[in-house]
Image (cartoon, rainbow, N blue to C red; front, side, top):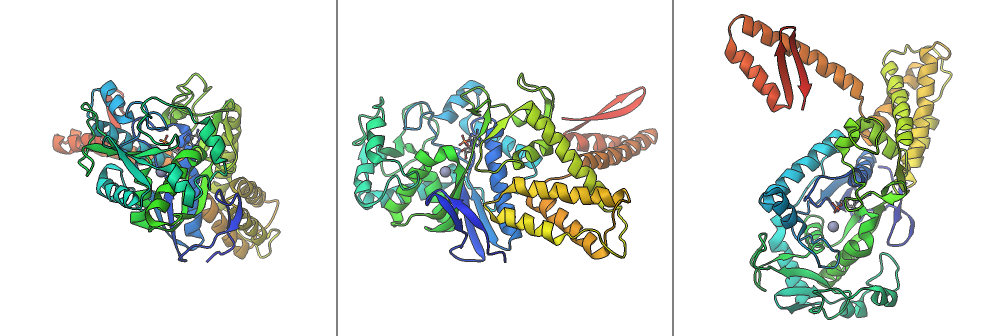
Length: 486
Ligand code: AMP
Ligand code: ZN
């Protein structure tokens, strides 16, 4: 097992040696999407970054339980328990049930992450599936004296908690300044303190998503779900808690407070935060109107885009930046990534065609060592990519007959590429996947033609409908049959 991994811990504000609580097991919780609309590319960056971390931990020999939740209830528009419920608002707009909204955008989220070739988490719990656990946790927090009821809504008492614990442990802010800078907001009159936040919110007559509780009908506050679900699946103390940087100041700060007020334990040993995808320096978000969808990027159908870019090009573009650096979107940067990714894939396509020699002009061990060293240095993927380009150069040199490689070194080279390009980065060759799909479909279309000629319409329909259910439409014309993908 690889034991040299250093990672940056937001909690201590430095890089630390990764020492899991219970090696070889690693528990990792990452805040998932709020499924009230399509995920934008910024959200994808965060999930792709944690996919890299998940994959590298597994590659390093750890047995990882990766929990990534789906927020499908209790997220109001404002960060401070104000505004409309995001699901209810969207449901009204689309004239659907809130749970239809949840279903629609959960499926969309999964489709997008599949296109980016990310691995599914080990457990993907939903807030609505864990109402009982959240109520139990709120009861415990109340029993411990850190929460109070006001008209059927339960608030966390930040001032009381701050007497024993450090509320700003994660971000190191000054509590007095925070209090001074917190605006008084409508609906806050019930709160005793300005920083108090809701654990349970009383349902209004028009609230659709509501559950019975000891305090009447209502729904959970946004933060409690992550505390309840991480404790359920990973224990009161676990290894890694992650999410985008924007979550640290409020959501994660409140998660820590809830967990400590319940179990008296700071839940995660390492807190990891990914940096934001920006557009012209502004954070990509739905509210800023610059949050374009992955699909628009793939097709090029957006004012900001000069053309479409494939999912693997976009993923490669993201991996070319360190997860803690901001990454600014631009057509030029994506163009460069497209070229770089093609260069890498072209070299890989030659790898199996290389013939080994008796001796070798190249040694692969140093390259492999540099790659491991870079990943052990807080998952430094851009440095690994530079090494992979070096490996590509070797492949091209041998292929052009300008250098020799031995059997042993060639095997090492193949292993290096398999490990880092496919297993750790989760990249794949889209061209060859398309070539394979093309030839399989040509064969299937030919079989259908034969079935039709034999008047075996049952079989020809079965083929057409089967393909349709996979999102592939056949179109017959006098010149033959063509297909397209939905
Ligand atoms: P949400 O669906 O808004 O709860 O966000 C899901 C995840 O995406 C969270 O971890 C956010 O921190 C993250 N996120 C949101 N905007 C961006 C962005 N522009 N770049 C990177 N991550 C983001
Ligand atoms: Zn969370």
